[in-house]
Image 1 (tube, rainbow, N blue to C red):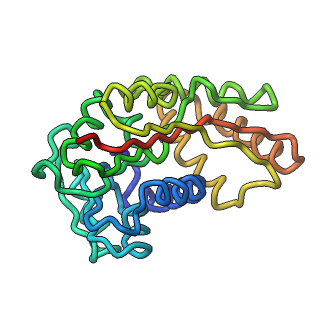
Image 2: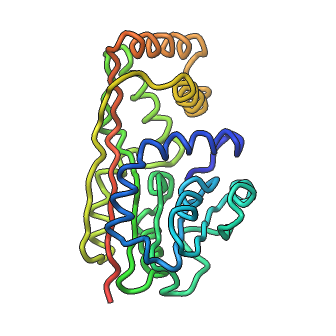
Length: 255
């Protein structure tokens, strides 16, 4: 997960909301990879420990989290002391080959300069026959905003993310990355969208805090406030559509 201007507790709350969005596909990938039988499990880019913390309570294997941010690791350790958190770089994982049965990431490839190298490193530390999982990677190039007055939000956020050195269109590339890494049984898909009501006030507040952080210095506060007002109105009157294609991928290590 990404390094950010928000505090660890604010990030943790944001990551919990993101994790709720992707819960269904996690369960599917955990079944495909037989997570129940995994003895050693690593999350690369574990952030504040939301995903690997969940895994530590659901499955019997030993859990490990790696993140480049020591502050995030300290927060995660306090929240989830049964997991071993390590500060390190995903491009040079500090583990021997064939250490883990399952290695995974969640909203990580978006934020790294060389996602192919990260996935190759994840494969290196995963035993033959084990699984590498990319649980969620967004594709802002396919974002849909409606009403049309809100399309500017997506355009500005995509530009802001690119300015931070990310690849906002990483989602559509995950199949190519997993295939090039030489995995067996590669499966790739995209999360669907459903709109059955409005997000909670808590979710909307979190979304707008993230937007304000991403767009800091690129948009006058008054304009940002007007966009937020339009967004809230569209949610309340049932017209709002917001969809960011979010891809997932999994593959089994050859050997």
